[in-house]
Length: 424
Image (cartoon, rainbow, N blue to C red; front, side, top):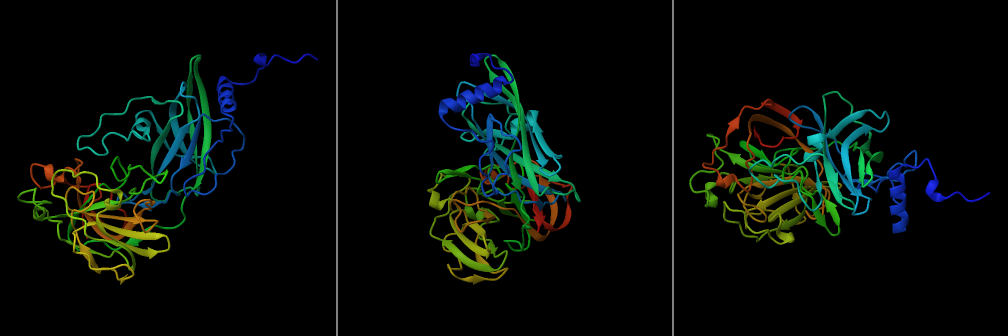
């Protein structure tokens, strides 16, 4: 029998032909998913297929309850186009499903997807600005061979079960010269954490405090992608910046160019939980507000700080402290409520505040950032405009425009959402 001309073979889509050709030309095999970052081994796909996108989850998604009384899952999907630089693809929809039932528990499409996706070297606009960024262009088109990050923030109503394992369904079209070729792929089955978040005491003394840059919107904490030692991290995913608020809603009064004008400056920082001090840094000078200082060396990013190990693989970071104010040394045991030092403006800080978070390593770079909650606090308002470290001292006055919050009132074992004003 004569051999069939390979150009006349049937039953293969243009997408499969294109991907197979690209794979063979590169001399490699494209897998359906990359290993996750701390997410456990990926489950094998039921049917082998070439996929235009690969994906990796960058953390173990950990459920936590916030002041909206909803359970949140916030994590990232790092996607890479396996197509040549000459071929783009259009990503139309990202679905997160329960891997057991395949029920959709969250999805992104249209403008919501465009606003939650960006190339890794081109951060989303607005994360470091005062004025909200214009909407991202739609549809979401990923050029060939590029790597993009998709910021996923899921919410579950009270009583709704969080899946033990998630899967991600990506759909769109490869934009080949002959026309769009649709694709669908299921990637990166990912276990969610079964360990509850640390439930902590406040890191500051009783009073009114402004929680800035916390989860889960487009802030420099939540969407701060950092390439460290050849790998991407989101080291501040759930970090919160704390500012002391006065009786009239002021965070500073007088001259905003003076450190002493800020109510936070010199306020005591206290241990949120007992543990052992594993890292201390002092001697970094305070910056002069209100203009953003030059980016410091990586080792001085968090300025003067104290890191306390409170559980296996869990460390509390208290950062941007006043030089010379630290009251503990490495190896010390600390009790909840013990004074560690004073709030300052050292490191990568424009106006005095306490940067506080949970880490998975003793050092800030590199680390992962798991969620946490506080045992008790009362929400007393919300700040609508994005007022944060870099523009707090540039406001006409130091008085925050505090408005009522739908979550006003007492909360237990909850995580404060971005720009809430609360009382400890």
